[in-house]
Amino acid sequence: MPARLSVNLNAVAMLRNRRDLPWPSVTGLGRVALEAGAHGLTVHPRPDQRHIRFSDLPELRALLDDSFPDREFNMEGYPTEAFLALVEEHQPEQVTLVPDEPAQATSDHGWNFAEQGAFLAPIVARLKKKGFRVSLFADPDPAQMAAAQALGIDRVELYTGPYGACHDDSGKASIELESLGKTADAAIALGLGVNAGHDLTVANLPALARRIPALAEVSIGHGLTADALEHGMAQTVRRFVAACGG
Ligand SMILES: CC(=O)[C@@H](O)[C@H](O)COP(=O)(O)O
Ligand SMILES: NCC(=O)COP(=O)(O)O
Image 1 (cartoon, rainbow, N blue to C red):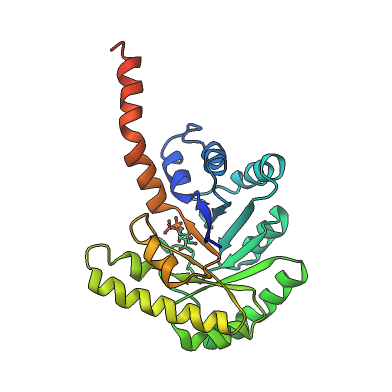
Image 2: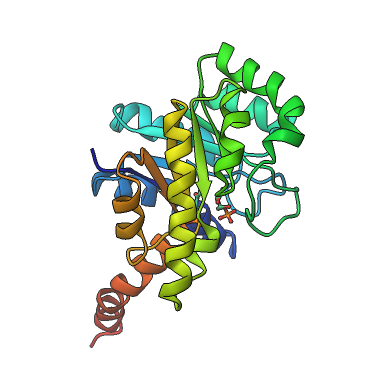
């Protein structure tokens, strides 16, 4: 089965937040994504709300519940008490825990399961008890998968940033790809599902999907939003030229 696509709306939210105006609409573009076939929506509400605002969450939950009940809401974040309260309020189908510092510009590494397992274990147990599917952000490192699996999680999300960064070096990309592939092999052998995300694009996704045929889900925001701008720009300029009376 092909990997499912969850559209990360953080980049849209960041653009919206440049002005005190309601566009681009996070919920509106979430609807466009779902109408176009996305299997779900991802948000990463950071503590300073510089991208997704906490007030976006009820609207997105309602969009999925009212119009797309077969799609999924994936909430990502560092498991502070405040983040866990948001999760419990908005009931995503999947919770992805990431080891990000509050002021971190973007996610840039996975959990160290050996060192941070004791911190994660009660949080995973709490989320599992409440019925959430739990995924943990993981570096491409097969040796860490046993410690991840021991936490009782459902999936790992492989951090694909280093692979995405090889956009101009196919030799290095194939090394990063193999590292992701071996980590996925180890996770799958232990019974874990495998998601992936960070800096995935139309260009680098096909090789990833071929190397990891059981890839369950990819969440994509930055590259997908850039692609939408690139491919939508000409049509939009035509609309504005017409609005100018041209
Ligand atoms: C976990 C991950 O890789 C994404 O959540 C990524 O960090 C996107 O979040 P930002 O758009 O806030 O960078
Ligand atoms: N979970 C990873 C994710 O949502 C990726 O975001 P981006 O790097 O594509 O913006």
